[in-house]
Length: 173
Image (cartoon, rainbow, N blue to C red; front, side, top):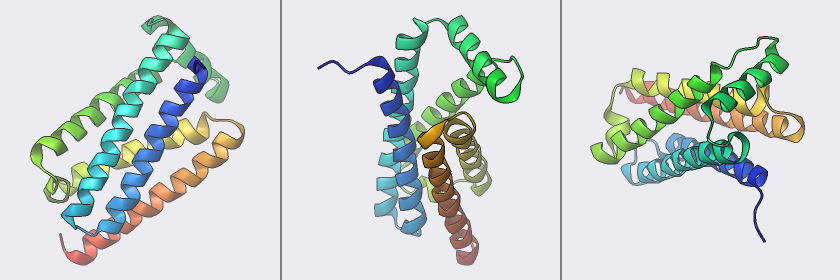
């Protein structure tokens, strides 16, 4: 049985989101234990790889590897939701992929504990941006059950990061 392009595209994005959520929950619960941070890094790496697979799937099955087609489709979707015919969100998606790849690569090269030791502002801004993107993709631009699942996902993400921030300020780091 061959998997359809639509199913593959959906599976890869939800795998990306699920892996990121799992990583956030583990990160929040690890309280600085480096052994658990390794699991976070692995989850976020899987999430990043799944995002790249999602992009490849969407470009292959929906846009025949055409940036112009992807831009037009993004503009159409933005117009449906916001009444603005603008495809610039595609560049935001490119930025998310490049930043996530860079973030994961940095973490692998810097070591397992590096996330706990790097600038807190960098970590907070990056993950706030990523949660914002996930909110848009799973709630704002989603429909039906996917939207409700996105709400749950975003609530879990926000709770996880509130716990991380609380622990960070209580520990004095």
